[in-house]
Amino acid sequence: MTVVVVEAYATLARRVLARPARLGRTRLVAVDGPSGAGKSHFTACLADALAASAGGRRPPVVHTDDLLDGWDDQFTFWSRLEAGVLAPLRAGRPGAYQRYSWARRAFLPGAVPVPVAPVLLLEGVSAARAAIRAELSLAVFVTAPADLRLTRAVARDGPGILPELRRWHAGERAHFAADATAGHADVLVDGAPRLPHDADRYYLRLSGPVPDWAGTHR
Image 1 (cartoon, rainbow, N blue to C red):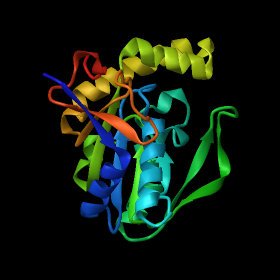
Image 2: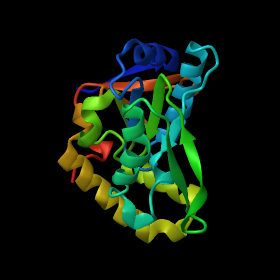
Image 3: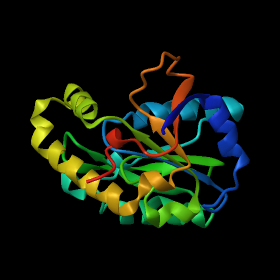
Image 4: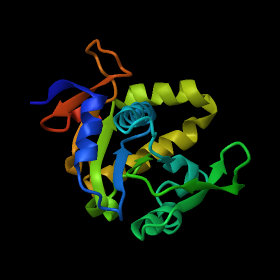
């Protein structure tokens, strides 16, 4: 039976800060889950809560969508993330990456710096993959029903993305099934909450088996 618990982002922020750093001096928090589940909103709210807990210093956030070389780079971008961000932070040095412009279909010339910080939030599909699992201080998996996620994506980006999006969703399902991402997450989040709550201060944590609608199976 899956149980839904209302939890404050502030509580989760304190939990993050109480955990040991496993990527050099940095606590790496991965916010994973299928597209359209609500990862970006969750990450922004957690960043706000961490800033409030750390005297206003907002943690850096890296979105994996900014590292993709287009639609075909759904999972193979990781080597750029490793070389530009993870490896330097592991060694106690600041990292950097080039941001991909989906409008121009090319990487922008300027480098985006990633400082050595107490916490780094890594948000996006496959952010909590097995390759980084041992160095995560916290793994979060945000999920929502497939039909709702599709509706959100089309509302955000337009119906023209549907062919690529359906292929993307199939890739997600295969990856999450093979990687067992949700089963290894420390926190499973309901990205389609049905309980009334202040969505900027609280989130709904799922406890128990991963629900059938989570979009993590073939």
